Image: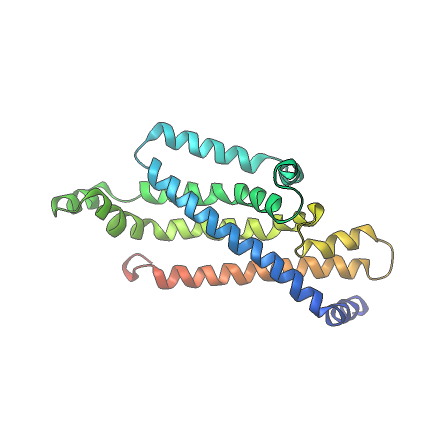
Length: 218
């Protein structure tokens, strides 16, 4: 109980910093998810009927997610410098695969019979995409976005190592002073608020999925 009390006291005493670093972390999550969704869905749509390009795109995105986190965060420093942009590029690369893969999967699961019926009704290829394929694939696509958001929340903690800020600052400071007073409280503060942000974003995306999916396919 003393440890819990000490943790809550630390959070209360440093609440302004907690809010600032939480906002920095949230900015990473929002900006990365918007960019990765636009690019991932866009590429998924483009390669849906191109088997070779589809495999190449998925292969490249799969390579991104296998790269060691710290290496990926630091590799762009010579190009864009320390701070936000190096972290943003690395997080974007990690977030791309779940969105791209789920877009490809969601579009592939649309029944050919449904598409044939839409074609028989005179819908163009673009109309079939926007009115039939994407709405039917949307639940699968947004599941990929939710997975990518959770990945981004956790991996964004590494941004602190390249002066990128975020809640990882608490964890880094705690590890740097481990064994000294309040070190454990700092680590737990960063960890707990990363988890909280991840749950908030996942909850928001869950509501988006519920209210943007046709009742007939929920």
